[in-house]
Image (cartoon, rainbow, N blue to C red; front, side, top):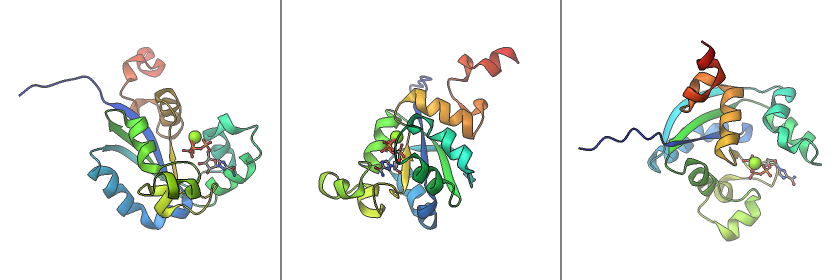
Amino acid sequence: ELNFFFPAEQTVAVIKPDMMDQKEEIMRSIEEAGIVIQAQKTVNLTKDEAGAFYEEHKNKEFYGDLCSYMASGESTFLVLSANNAVEKWRNIMGPTDPNEAKTSQPQSLRSKLGKDILKNGFHGSSSVEHALKSIEQIFGSSMTIRSSKSKSLMSS
Ligand code: RTP
Ligand code: MG
């Protein structure tokens, strides 16, 4: 048996507030896709925390609505680990707009469960750098598998 110690990629998945009643089934389907759930945390973000989480959209017209949606109830944040985790999870979610997903990716979660372009049920990091930033915000830096590079470990 060969053992590889090359770390798998990490991404952050969020089960948004309106999807929480289906959390268990969703987590099961993630694991059935061969993805490891390394950590989970359920929190009701404040609007300010939601704003920080989606900081890259602060100048978009939907930013206020997005922050209100994300602060409207508890969400579950997951750290996922797999080869190509970022792309893999985004493919499972499907496109941002559930209506578009219904034609282009009918098997995706947003196609099957999303309500509209805002209340689309799920988040996925857009890059490994973005994932790292979200992990640090929600879980703290000790959670990252690239933690040998992280400031907090080097200084401790
Ligand atoms: P996410 O970040 O949540 O995984 O979604 P995404 O990459 O597919 O889409 P993004 O452009 O990053 O948008 C972030 C979230 O903002 C809401 N949104 N509303 N009303 C609108 O036109 C609009 N566009 C985006 C969605 O909740 C989207 O997931
Ligand atoms: Mg995004």
